[in-house]
Image (cartoon, rainbow, N blue to C red; front, side):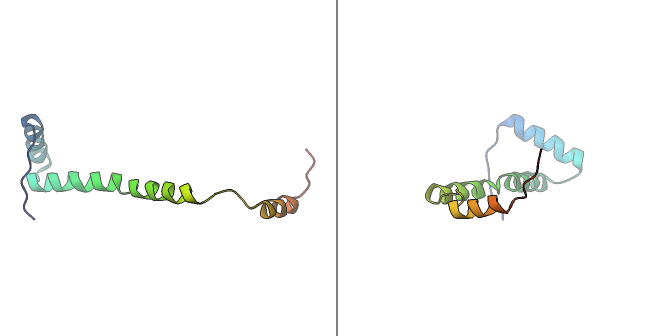
Length: 78
């Protein structure tokens, strides 16, 4: 896919130098950068979804389950 973007001159020049240093094309450098950015932020949606769920649902343990679990613990002396 071909696209056009606008960048400040300083970022463009730094990217050009980095691409030359790595021995890759400008397109490959930008593709790598966007891929890394997407990877870093792909989990953002998971947190939003969990927050949405817990707005509606309680995460508290049912009192009966709590009592059963507590009663199943061994009585240790400290």
